Amino acid sequence: MDQPVQLHHRVEGPPDAPAVVLLHGGGSRGATWDLFTPALIAAGHRVVVPDLRGHAGSPRSPSYTLEHHRDDVIALLDRLRLDAVTLVGHSLGGYAASLVAQEQPGRVARLVLEDPPVPPRRSEGRLSLGRLLVLSIGTADPRRRYDRLALTSAITQLRQGQPQWWDALPRITAPTLLLSGGPRSHIAPARLAEVAVRIPRCELVTVPVGHRIHSTAPDVFRATVLNFLGDAVRDGAPAPTSPAEDAVGEE
Image 1 (spheres, one colour):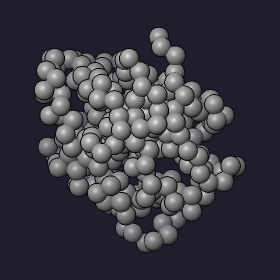
Image 2 (cartoon, helix red, strand yellow):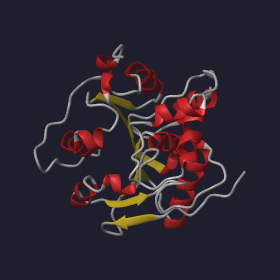
Image 3 (cartoon, one colour):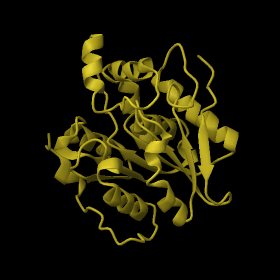
Image 4 (tube, one colour):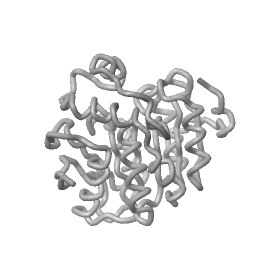
């Protein structure tokens, strides 16, 4: 297996504070968290914001596997000597975070998955490059620097059966917040509800604004995540109260 790459990243906040690692989605970059980072720091957290392999300031690669992203994040945690971290991941970053929590469950104190992709248990067939590019619209921002292969590779793999990922979901021991973008997202809420059932300590909350919750509804996202982390919400923004069963059947 290829060696992990050193991810470009920034670290902000008190060095002795509990760490929160923010993982962006495919075709994006760490800067997508710029509005959220100050709230975490104000709440007493140290924040680590990497660019995933093939994105923004991180190295490119001749190939990209989902496990590459997992191993790169674990290598970053090793490099920074971080344990008992909170992982927050959007889309592809959420999937990578789930892989880390499966691989090293004792290292993840809390887990936040924002509208992560849900692969099938069995493969759904191959896609043409044209179809892959169509699926990537709305996920990637053409103004941002990323390797197109990183995005198309992730989409291809996530269309393939991932039974091992499904089987490993019960190994996630961290309290988990699973955020669904509702029927406006291309991630089916019913599939996320299935995931929530398999993660032992998982709360599913629907914020019906589509796939980019942290960008489209930043106040609600901030309040919801800070409440989950046990922090006081300083601006008084209300958090949604949708229980898991409300997301079932929303497609």
